[in-house]
Length: 255
Image (cartoon, rainbow, N blue to C red; front, side, top):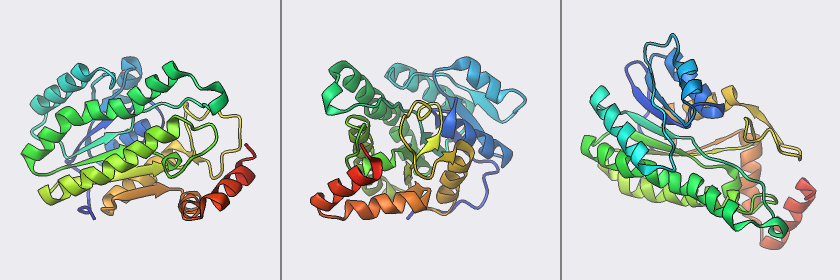
């Protein structure tokens, strides 16, 4: 559904959310394969550490909840590079929440980060890609966006929104020569999941998750999900009638 990528050599990739987890691992893998990589996140010191000794890496700190910062960094990259071949929006947050501990301020903050932050990235990136008539954008959602899950009252809703968003983006951008990637990881061992107090099936390392993400992009896939033994079971569960779906989720999670 997208163009295949045979080599990363010479490609220019902007990773937003690159200081830890999948984003940092993805940056390392791309640099190893000869890509020029701009790393963005809030933590400048961590970005500079990742870029140390990497002549093809740029540390470009920003906060995606501040649209002016995203706009400024995008403009700086346009001056630094003649084009951007791929933008990966990996940044996001997680707050466990159920109906009996619903907190409006936390809910709004998480939606502002996970959804509003992506919109802030699209604002400067879409005009750039449309002007180029080429390139691509990948947005990391989550398997939690496939269907309702315990403790994901707001997080799941934010990721479901991103799944819908990427589908609409594909319909608009693919005819214009721009690739779109919907990326849905399962459980990945990152700072976001470190505090989970429940069993996480098929838990992956950040390195393995990043490698799976890049393989999907290289193959030109639109819907990239991993690990498939877990994500496919979630996709199949979503096809069940609600009575069966709710019973299965309660039985599997014990929540």
